Length: 233
Image (cartoon, rainbow, N blue to C red; front, side, top):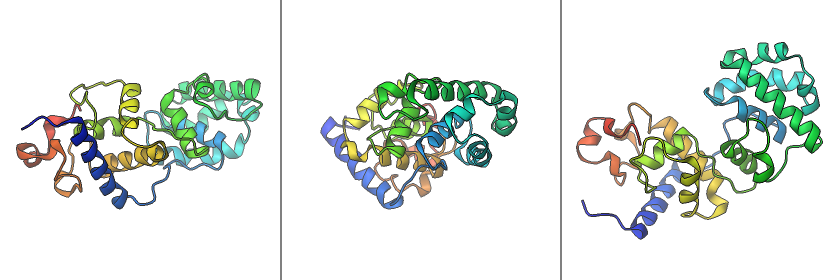
């Protein structure tokens, strides 16, 4: 197979993304929230669990502790009991209460609107910050989670597609350089939905993938065998 030029790769990326736009015409954050505080809390809780499961516990959590100050002053055991179904509930309680205290003490209980400020908060990295920026404030952000890493690797949208544990910050920069900022948030959503629905970690459903015709990982023998060779991408 001839080596794909950067120009050809970017053209393919945009063509494949156009297909994802047709498949997911109105993407939105899978976490339920009514304000930036609720979103940042839900996003921190979503680590090592599913958004669907997070949505089962947050209504009670938000009702009991509607403001950052309320959560910061909570009895840790009360918080642990609410979020227990998510797993890692003790460490997540510490993260949430530390986050709430920092918001209350340093930002008057309000969630900051910049990446530089957000990543200073306990338990908040670039992925969480990008989720909040893009979905709560409409600021361009490209969250890179495991689905985004896997799908962009299998599609070879990035140069380090062979590396099992690529640097999420490098992936974020490389993908964002190929798309205009106003598309970044929805681009991440669509890649995540595609990863959840079709491009599964263990057995990708290449037979029903709308990108199979151009996806490098779905060609030849790999498409016939479930593309098991690309699990580490």
